Amino acid sequence: MGQKVNPHGLRVGVIKDWDSRWFAKDNAFGDILVEDYKIRKFLKKTLYAAGVPKIEIERDAEKVRVHIHCAKPGIVIGKGGAEIEKLRMTVQNMIGKPVVLNIVEVRQPDLNAQLVAENIAAQLVDKLSPAAEIIGACNVFVNDDGVITGHITDGVGFVKNLELNGVPVKDKKVVVLGAGGAATAIQVQLALDGAKEVNIFNIKDKFFERAEGTKAKLAEKCPECVVTVDDLDDKAKLEEAIKACDILVNATIMGMKPHQDVTLVDKSLFRKDLVVADTVYSPEKTKMILEAEEAGCKAIGGVGMLQQQGAVNYGLFVGKEMPLAEYQEFQKAQAK
Image (cartoon, rainbow, N blue to C red; front, side, top):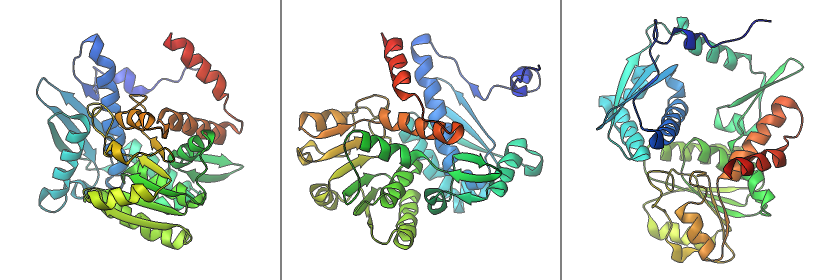
């Protein structure tokens, strides 16, 4: 039997270069590697329509340089460079380091294997899950007897984690902070699963526009769920919404390194009957979660969402329930 090897690995140092180019000491290597992963995941999701087959990252002592290869550079750059500057500031705020973005045009996208594969996958999908249809994106494709269905599982994993912690979302009022990829999936899944209200708060950037689009789609697909979109900087409106809600969700990067000392919600707003949930899983308990616990709230961190999303994906691929308890025991043993 032949051994399958990624041909890129065989060609690095011969005709191809590393996609990440930097040096780090042992105690910093893991954090920087995760940071690279988060940058790539964010940019790939945000710029999917631009056709991005590759993202290269270079680091020195002063800056992080990100080379975005794309088939439609105009989408990334925007009018007068406005969009790329917004994107640069978002990535810079995400990692807390100076960032330079460089756009590399893919001149023959029809000859790029990654873009061709993504295009074929999109054409082959026979149907979409309800959430994927509303959002217009997929992260899982399942072939069921020749019928290919596209799913998006971030929101499903989040809601399942709430339910496992004894928090059903049906008929609940939920405040969601953020309007990025994961936040949108959560908002849509909450509406599909019967939430009474979903109040979205985000700063006024292009993700704010996405949130308004989500609101419009949910008004059509889930008219029984009231969806609102407000400016995260409107503290009075945010305070009013939190006081009236059952569940508060942080779906932003705040709480994640290097923003581990940041929370978007004043702890004076926490009360014992409020459920506080976070999508950030590293650190396992963010500042918001710790303050919610101190106030007597039911506080749910992001690790469970990550595990439940994995379990959902496993079930879709394998057709069986993931042995999650065994995996959790393995994790505990590794941590000792």
